[in-house]
Image 1: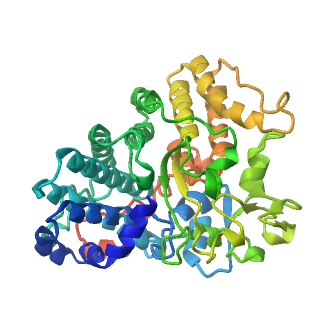
Image 2: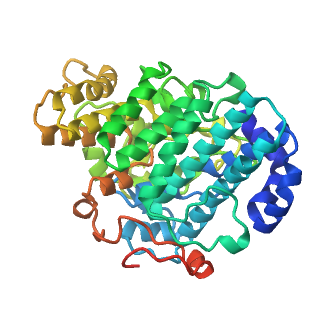
Image 3: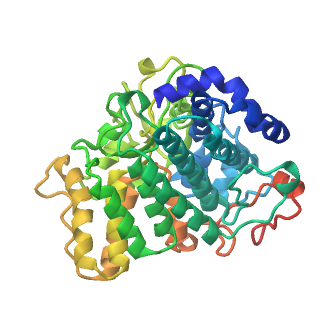
Length: 473
C-alpha cells in the first residue's frame, strides 16, 4: 500500500479531475482508460478516501468515539461539530457530515469508473480480475461506512450522468445485500495475500471479513459464522503474542491484520492525522477524544490492554511522564499515536488504522454463537482473545479468568465487554451500542428513534430533492 500512496501522489492531478467533475469524468473516462497502467492508476486513486489524513478531513472517528461513552470532545473548541456529536446537538448543517458524505461517494465514483472501463482494456485476464476485485471491495467498504453513519443512502453501481444523480435513498437492506454479493465476488478474484510491495491492497480475507461484518449488522448469525469460518480457513491470520504490536510502526501489517488502512509520513497529506488530533495538548496535540473515566473503569483488574490503550497519571507517554493535567478527564488515548522523533510533522503520522483485526473476527464468531444460543461453543473464540491479554498481565495466573458460563445473557454481556476493552478507540463503540439496541440507556442525550443514525447533510438535501431526511431531524 505504500506503493499505492506514492503512485497516487504522482497521478493525483489527473484522477482528482475524475473525482471532482462528474460531466468531465463521463466524457473523458473512455480516453483515459487505455492501458493496464491507466486502470491501476485509477484504482490507486480509489484508495485515497480511506485515509485519516489532513487533506481528507475524515471525521468518521468522531462519529464512532466522541458520540460513544469512550470519549468526550476535549480540544480547544475549534471544531464545534465534534462538540455537537458529544452532546447529540448536531444538525444536518454540521460540517463533518457533509465532508464525510462527499468523501465516501468520491471513493464510490472512483471504484465505479474502474469497474465501468476495465473490461475494455486489453490486459491479462487474471490482472483484470484482481483490479475488479479490489474495486468491488473498496466500493463495498465505502457503502458500509455510509450505512453505518446515515442508514439508507443512494446506491450507484455505475457512473451515472448528472441528470441521473438525483435518486432516492436505497434501503440499507439492499445495500447490505450489494455489499455481501460484491464481497463474495471480490473474494473469488483477490489473492490470499498481496506481495510485499503491494501491502495494503484488498485481499480475499478482507472481502470475506467485510461480508461477515455486513451479516453481523443484519443479525444474520448463521451467515456471520459462515464468513468468519471462511476467513479462518484461509490460514493466514493469528493473534499476535504482543497486543501492542498492532499499534507500533515497525510491527504493522502483521498476522493479525485482516484489513489495514495504510498511512505514511511524507508531509504530503497521506499521514494519519489522529497522531495530532488525539494527542494531549501537553504533547503538541489538539486533545480531542479525551478518554472517559467510565471507559477506564471498564477494564478488569490487571488487564494489560488498559495501559496499551489509555495513558493515565505517571504513565510513560511517548517519552514524557503523563500527568492528570494532560486531559480534562485525566486520561488520554494511546492508540495511533507515536513519539515525536518518529514523524517529521505531527499531523502526518504513519501508524496505520487496522480496520479489521483477527481478534475482531473471533469476537464476531463468539457473538454470533452466543446469539444463536450456542453458548458453550462461544467460549472458545472468546477465550482466545482473553488468553492473549492474560499472557501479558502482571499475574497471568489470576488475571482475566476464562468465561465458562452456560447462560446466554451472561455470555452476551461477556462478549460485549470483551469488544469494549479489546477494540477500544478502534472506531467501533458507538455503532456497537446502536446495533445492540442499548445506546439510549447508555449515552446521555441519545434519543431513541433519532440518534441511531446521523442526519443527511443539508447540502445534499438541497441538491437532491429525491432525498428524504432521517426521522426527527
